[in-house]
Length: 248
Image (tube, rainbow, N blue to C red):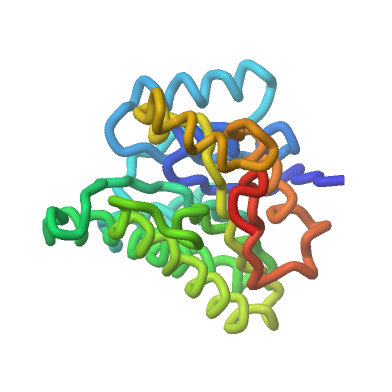
C-alpha cells in the first residue's frame, strides 16, 4: 500500500515542520521529492540530506509562493526536468496574528498572498501538467483554525478557510481528468509556528483536545501520504481532519 515509486512530489514550505515531515514520508514511499523554501537554505539542505542519507530522492528549491509567476514557472520547470509531476502538497504558510482592530492591511494581504494565492498559483501550474498525464494529486494544507476560528487570527483563518472552498471547486473541475484535490486540516501540532504558545495558553489549548495531547508533524504527513496515494483515487473534494478531536 501507498507505493509512490517513480512519482514526483512538489512540497511547498518543505524545509521544516509539516512540510519537512511530508517530504520525508513521501520519499520513504518512493517519490522523488522537491522541497521548497523561502529563506533558510541551510534548513532546507538539512531536510534534503536526511532524505538522501536514507537512500531516497530529494532536492531543495528556493521559492516564494506569493510570487505567482515564479511559482508557476518553478513547477513547470520541475515537471519538464523530471519528466512528470504527480503530487502537489501546497503547505507553505505564514501566520501574522493580531486582533481585528490592530490588523494591518499589509499583514492581511501578505497572509492571503502566501497562504491562499500562492497555493492557487501552484495548483494551477501543477494541474496543467497533471491534465496531460490524466492523473494527479493536489493536497492543500489548511488548518483547524480555518474551520473553527481563533482569537487574533482573522487573517490566518480567512486564508485557511478559503483553501477548503478552492479544494472543493478544483475537485469538481478536474475529477474527470483523473486528478483528485483534497485538503488536510491539522489541529494543534508541535511545529515552529506553534511553539511560541507556552504556559497557561498552551495548557488551555491541550485541555480542549479530546485525545489529551498535541499532534506531531509526522501524523499530518501520514494523512497527506494517504491522499497522495493510488489508494485514495476515489477521495476528492474532501477535508481530512487530523486534530485529535479538537474540532468535529
